[in-house]
Length: 159
Image (cartoon, rainbow, N blue to C red; front, top):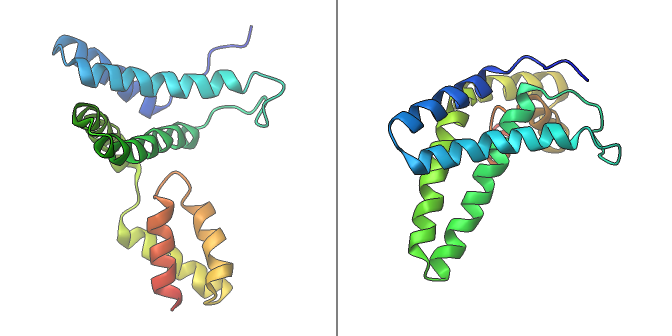
C-alpha cells in the first residue's frame, strides 16, 4: 500500500470550504466543491491504471488546477447550450458552479502585468516570432493563466 501523499493547499482549502458549506447548508456550493475534489481524486486514481498515458506520475498542484480549469471549461461550454435549449434553470445552476470554481482559480492565476513581464522576457530571449514564443509562454503559464489570455497577450506583444 502506497503511503498517503500530502494534500496540496488547494485541496485543503476545498475540504475546509466543504465543511463550511455543510455548516451553512449551502447545497449548491457543497455539491460543486465535492465534485471538484472528486475530479482531482479521479485523476489521481486514473494514474494508477497501467493503460493511462500518465501512469505512475505523482499528482502535482498544477494538476489540481488543471482539473479545476477543465471543470470551468465544461461549465462555459454547457451554459450557452442550456440557454439555447431553453433550460434556464440548468444554465443558472452551471453559472453558480462556474462562479464558485473560478474563485479558486483566480487566486492561482497570474495577473496581466505578470504575464506581460514573462512574455516580454521570452521575446527578449527567443525573438519576436509568435510561433516561437507562444509554445514557450503556454508551457511557462500552464495552470497559472487561461490559454486564450496568454495567446492574446503574446499576439499583442509580438506584433
